Image (cartoon, rainbow, N blue to C red; front, side, top):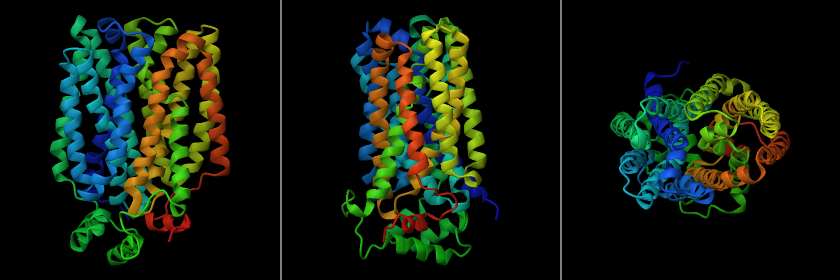
Length: 443
């Protein structure tokens, strides 16, 4: 059965939340030098300036679950689009360091919320046979957003705008944020959220447009209702309990390992890393584009095969790539080999795009039952962003103290990820969301 055009269009619009997520995350990489000079920041203060958006993502990921359950996934995405817009303009027009921190924090709230709601919404409107690649499309847009940020920074840097250069780098994000808000008006509500509110006819209409798991819409509606089982399980029931311990453990470990690879340190400090390896400022921005492009290519490749090859196989390949590339990066920095630094980072970003990057939001959006999916997605996102804040805040300190050996630390963590994937991680490809719940032993 072919994918409906309505489903594809709705997925593309929802994934714009991912594009803004990626853009907002990476855009600061081109401004760290300006921010350090203008606000006279130490290594610690620069780390905090970068991490303030991540602190916002932590809070955003925690608080977004309940509103998305009450008001709906789509309505929550409208609010997140507004936060992105406010952050972009505010960061560009900031009048001092404190106002800049405030508006970056606002953007972080949007990123944290989008990391929960965009993949969850996409998973809930997608039939199982398309779900992996459609949720992975959110990740594609995250990576595309990162690449756009690198390209935007490079182009703006080429205009030699001087002291206002960094303001333009932040301000351009307002354009896609406004487009996201407008386009969301054409998207449907989540059919599973509609079922949780007893709006059966609306849920049926969305499933007819988006596609069926079983080939019979009425059977799908019964399966969703059985999963919600609201006569026996309240949407307000305790989340941290024995019943949900398995998906909770899987989500937390997946999210922790994602950041223990050092991915966000490389995304936030790409320009700085290449300058550490001996490249000039504009050359470092160009190298960042190459790195972002490679990650995009491997993310696309993963999207094409994730529903055929499986989540676990991608994670295995990605883990091995992480270990080899981080070992190469450590060796290159210790021996001041600029060419090997570039090659190692390209392999690293390719491994991330093909493995963890493509799998994390798909996997976390699949493993929780309908009735607690928002809270489960929020937990995974919170863990991800908490670890991202720790890694991004500490990277300048570690890099200045131990240099290339910081990559050795990340590499050891990826050895543990490989063991976890081999021994614990389950495969979820092609399984309807309600059936995954049963595989987890949740009634």
